[in-house]
Length: 541
Ligand code: G16
Image (cartoon, rainbow, N blue to C red; front, side, top):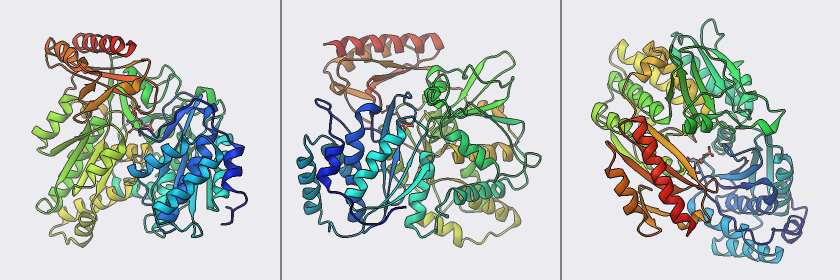
């Protein structure tokens, strides 16, 4: 931890880490993210923004996470975290983008002062920033750039070293709630979620084992630590960790991890799991998780974010009902356009719950979920959590059950609330929640899969000259630019039974993503290929 005094000027810090010529930066879906070797200046400037943001919110702790999550090892990035542990507000994303693109150190200082002036920020008031990073090789250098910026801005720094992204969000929320959310230490995190897991299980034992692919990222060592706080495997869950090599940073996300599994729809080649063994994969910073297994015929089955959402919504809905709270608390589900059509139908028609669709990016889903009593949100890629409104939490806390059955359900519901990292999607806490639910239902992955049939789907990446020319509307389901391209996509969709497809520019990678689904694997693949060709042709213009 460092003191709250400035050890350099803003101009000097910006001079130490000059912006490369001709690069345009943008705060994207999850912060700044690009090749690590052009990020030094962004880190220092982002630190200035974090310090200003902290001052704006009365000196509360603001988080900075140095990570590029699912991206390849040579990338890196930074995400800023608001005082309650959620993503940076959009207005400040725009300020961060503008700051990152200032051409000179003098312009950086000028803009720093302009932000302070326009937002009524007293530059002598306290600023507090909490910092962590994933295991990428470039992380140490970029962290030094951040610290130079923070010191120049006179911010108090708490540096947690290596953390998963959700652990950093947890620290921010704990620090700003005086420990009401938990103790702001790694041990505090493990105690909170490990303890809640035990309480939520209520003596039930998950069937079989869980093999966790940690993407060779920071989730590996952190899961190994968390396991020490879980019930012994004789009473609880036997977890087998694979792909936990953080000593070789070039192995990060390579042929493993949640994004690999979801995109390729196959298990990591390194997975040693046997038939019907339950498996899950985290991504590089452990904020996403997807489940899967191979059946007796070696056929791969994916249980992605949509499946987690339906499982969680079903279980929490049942607990609310059996506690006797159904009249007072309503559940809703938030998805993106990537949600499988079958999952959307299942939530609407079987669970009879409200479904909202937002653009990609957990910040949008989280915001939508905050408007619900209990908002279950998951992106299909496995990124998500559950949000409980303050009124819902009060209702649950004050509720007097009228029978032992109601009490049992209420206690499980309360333990689940503690087990969920409501600040942000958290692969470790999400996986524990899934395990609790499967244990209560006495299900393995096969039974979970049996709840409905996914429509076959395919996700492709198309490299184009400038992805920014692709603009969408209607929660990314329609392309409005380049003009005329949506019509071509629609024409292909018409030809396919249960066809649906859309294209959108990624906010984390230099590519356009194409999603397609159809009644059969062949139709989904064919539709995805045709739409990708349309996008490629439009992007070449
Ligand atoms: C980030 C965001 C997610 C988003 C994903 C892909 O995840 O937090 O909300 O789904 O990027 O975004 P895009 O399709 O725009 O590239 P992560 O896990 O990489 O931080």
